[in-house]
Image (cartoon, rainbow, N blue to C red; front, side):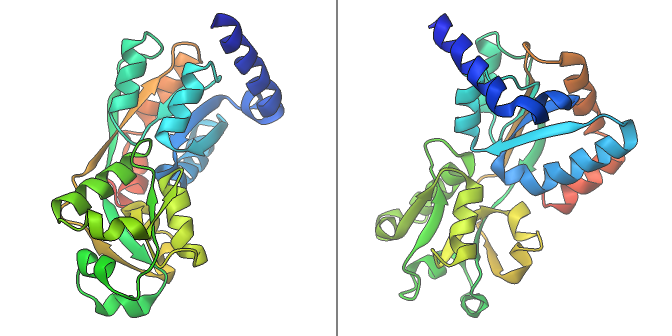
Length: 245
């Protein structure tokens, strides 16, 4: 088992070669936080002179990479579960909440905007494909599936579902036209891409509490400095701009 972890870490180093280790901070970041994180990283670099390398993906995928030895300094997850698990395993410092996200239903077809509610959209005969992040690995997909179950429409909608590895992939389904609508993060609906379509709030979906943890094998001082910086007024302004609390 240890040899597998060493081999994975070596391969990861070869893959990341220049970018990850030419940066002062390497961050594993949940896909839903992509736009927000890119803007935060740019501002942090501007204010501190420290460079940030980001890797984006589903929380489950990134968690798996970390447990196999991927050389990240900081993990920004889309849930509370995985950072807590890393802490329990002795791989990370105590987690903290950095944002609360919201699940929405999004479509590039603005004509669907005439339909008032998200559940009516899903049941519409014109909606034949629905993008959703894998509920088993992606917190936003899990919240979407729970909301459909609560609304008693999961069974009716299930044949239409197209599963993506992350909420970013699910959003891309609808953006590219591969799906008529997709469950997305509010942050995605508020981007320039999101503005090209229409979205519906999902009152039945619980907020997604997103936790971060500093990884013990990484550069802990720099990672903790970035987490502290995320509480500053300038950083929180960016986070709120993307629909997070």
